[in-house]
Image (cartoon, rainbow, N blue to C red; front, side, top):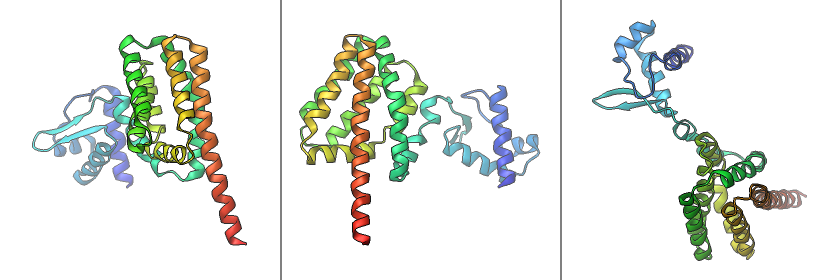
Length: 236
C-alpha cells in the first residue's frame, strides 16, 4: 500500500503542477512507471484508485485520461458515503445542511435566472401533484433543492449540498410525512422557499430554507429518540 500511495501522490503531483492538465492523456503505463521510478504493479493500482474517485478515466483500447476535475465529478462519492452513515452521524449531516442550505438559498435568490425559477417551480408543481407517491415526491424534492443550489452558479456548493441531501434520507422523511399526514406542511415550506426566490428576497429565502431544514432535523431527532426509548424499554 505504501508503494501504491506513493504512485498516487506522484500522479497527483503531475496533475497539480499542470504537467497533466484536465483532459490530457497519461503516458503508457510502462513509460509512466519508468518516469516516476515505480513498479508497473504500483502504477496499475494507483490508476485504479484514481479512477474510482473520478480523477482518471480509463478508456479501454484508447488510454487513460485526466478527467475534467470538475466538482460534480470529484464530489460524486459524497452522496454514496452519506447513504452509508449511521443514524447519529446523519444528525451531524443535518447540522451541516442547516448551516449551508439557508445561505445557498439566499444566494440563489440573488442569482437565479428566469429559467432557473421556472425549473424550480416545475419541480414544486410536480411535488404538489404527487400526493402520496413517495418515489415521485423524493424525485422532485431532490430535484427542487438541486435546482435551487444550481441557481447559485457555484458548482462546488451545489455538489457538496447535493451530496449531503441523501435520497435515502429523503425517502425516509417522505414516508414518515405521508404516514403522519404531514405532507401539506412540508409542501407549504417548499412553496415559501419558491415564493421568496421569485421575489428575490434574500432574507426571506434564507429564513424559509432554515425553517424547512429545521423541520427535517426535528423529525429525524424525534425518530431516533423514539427508537432509543423503545430499545431501552425492551432491554428492561
